[in-house]
Image (cartoon, rainbow, N blue to C red; front, side, top):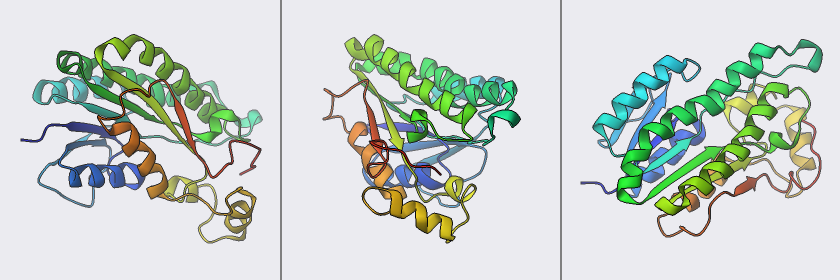
Amino acid sequence: MTEYTALITGGSKGIGADLGQRLLERGYRVISLARNVPDWTHANLEHVAVDLLDASAVAEAAADISARHEVTHLVHNAGLIWPNLIEDAKPEDIAGLAQLHLGSALTLVQACLPAMKARNFGRVMFNGSRAALGVPTRTAYSATKAGMVGMARTWALELAPHGITVNVVAPGPILTDNFWGIIPKGSERETELAKRIPVGRLGTVDDVTNAFLFFCDPANSFVTGQTLYVCGGASIGSVAL
C-alpha cells in the first residue's frame, strides 16, 4: 500500500505529467484531474476527467475523489493564459481564470483537508507564474496567478498547526505547449527570448518538476507560505514575452 496520494490538476501532459511520473517512481499513488486522458499509464495512476472551468464539475469530482482516497499532496498545476491587450480584455476572462486558478483550488483543498488534518500531514502546492509580477497581454492571467500567492500565504498560516504546508512554484518561460501557444516553436522570437534570460536559456519541464519535488518531500516541513521563482533570473528584472 502506498503511503502518499498526490492529486495533480492538469496531470495529463507537460509539467503535471512529468511530476506525476516522478512521484510514481517514488512510490506515490497519483490522481490526474484533467480534461484529457494521459497518453501514459501506470498501475498506480488514476485519471479523472473534468473541466476545471466548470465549478459544479469540480465539486463533483472533488467529492468523489475524497470519498475514495486520502489525498496527502494536492498540486494545482492546471492553467490557461488567454492573452489579450487591455483594449481586448473582458471581465469574463478574469472570472473564468479565477475559477480555474483559484476557485477550483479552493474546492479541491476543502475536499482534501479532513484527511490531511486527520493525518496531521499535507502538502498543498500551486503552479504560479513569473507573470504575476506583470507581463504585457496578461490581464486575467497575471491577476489570477498573483491571487494564488495571496491565497497560498493565507492557507499556509491557517494550516501550519495541522502539519500542512502550502507553497507556490512560479515558473518563468518554460518550454511547454502553453509557451509554444504564444511563441512559435523554434522561432527567432524564442531564440531572442532565451538570450534575454539571465542564465541564457529557457526553462524545461524538469526545472519546474524539481522545485515541486522539494515542496512535496515530507522532510521539508519548515518551508511554507513561500513562492519559489523558477525563471532563470527573469523575476529579478524585466523580460518581455
